Image (cartoon, rainbow, N blue to C red; front, side):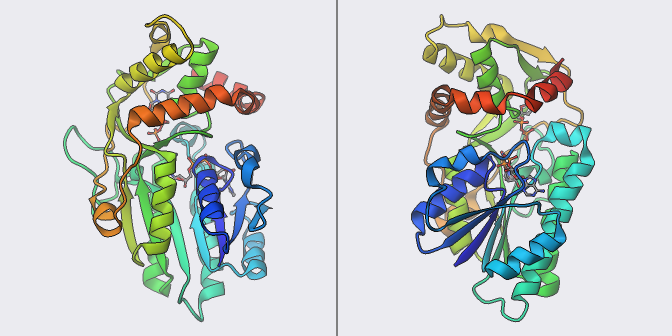
Length: 347
Ligand code: NAD
Ligand code: TYD
């Protein structure tokens, strides 16, 4: 099989590539990534010399390039992760999200359709999406695969749109697809603009921990390797034209999560208990901030036997250890443009 993975130099994509390279030595894995601020080939250093791995630097928005590589490498599977992925950035620059998340996805769909149209058998377009397309929950209830889409941020609106296009290509042209909508991921290689890696980095640097609003917002956290395992399973065993929700069965209010993180960091850094918590600073809320996300992952559990393998405490400890052991990675991604982003966002 010739499998195209888009966004493989990013956070989740790098874990997916590592898993597939190791588990399927007979597959040719092609990683297409534009290497935006969020893409980093350091994430794949350990597997870059594998004989079944090829890196392609390119932009999914570039139609002719996308058509060219589909013809050249004759892909029979696509796992599409490339995206602009940060809600706060989508608030300041929505068009970048329209371009990559919508235009880019449609380019890939067109290229797959053109290449596969005479024979859809043994082909699969796997679109990796988010639970944020469902909007916000109140204090009760869970997102099901049948929950109506109700996106609130430019990020989630662009992902919702891309999900609709994937489904539409399935209905209209018969393109074989699967979609997964996953909750918040955390783990090694996460760019330090999202809550957990940002706060780990700020604790290391002794900087304030900017908690938005009252800190009572709730997210359902999943360790990234468990997401990669779910993607592997759905890609191989999921039913065509189906959506699967993936979640951690692990809801945390932001403030409780931050306090747990502070306690674990104090222990790791040999600081007196309570040191990191003093850095917590309540700041202006995010506009349109979704109150709560929580996934009902019973469909993937019942159909494919998937469930998370790592508890939150274990996953968080592994994540903290990784950041403390990979200071060079952290220093390299937080130099340059990151500093400008940070000033604009938090000062
Ligand atoms: P990320 O921001 O860490 O990585 C995105 C990758 O895509 C980067 O390597 C970047 O260089 C690449 N990319 C961006 N624009 C591109 C373009 N135009 N052409 C080619 N490559 C481009 O994102 P992530 O957190 O790894 O998320 C991956 C996917 O999973 C996204 O589709 C996201 O919506 C989805 N998702 C993420 C989470 C999460 O918690 N991080 C949860 C559910 C779903
Ligand atoms: P984030 O990691 O950006 O993921 P998402 O918005 O996609 O869920 O944010 C997770 C939660 O943490 C969300 O409720 C916003 C909040 N948050 C803060 O309180 N401060 C921050 O600096 C960031 C980045 C997020």
